[in-house]
Length: 162
Image (cartoon, rainbow, N blue to C red; front, side, top):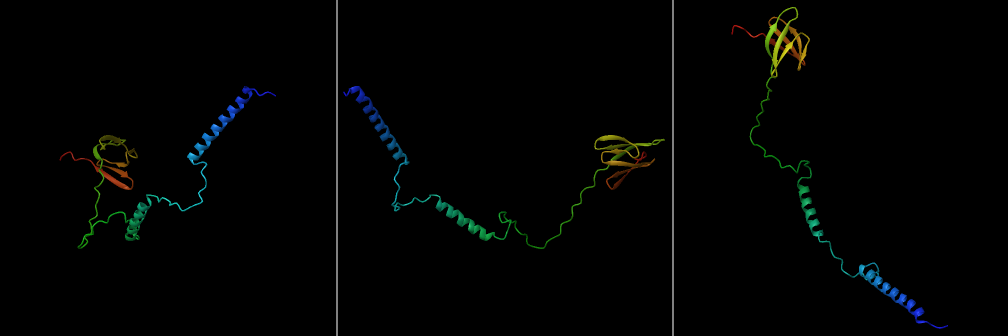
């Protein structure tokens, strides 16, 4: 059997390329750390986390603050200065009375009606009517009786001679 150069060069070239790919791949794997040998010597110093000292200082300051406000649930709010001297009772604040409707006129006939001004509006009302928050209880020649909730409001006819 004769050896031809063409038959030998092709497989040799393939082996050389395969060897180069293997060398480059293994070098890349070593550099990346994937093929590192296990370190059996643990004598290397372990680098400490740079934030450990900061965490310790924060924990110490929180312990000092917690010791001062341990029993006060509102310790985060600064206390108002305490007034010295006798304590005077405060007068109760009486709210102003609610505004009243104003009786403008009464029309007295078989079906009495009244004209009332309330909240910048004029209303013509009859007995048992509802307007805004009021119920009309009665209408007489001299007055109109309204009910707001449990309160009765009596509106008197304005005097013409005044």
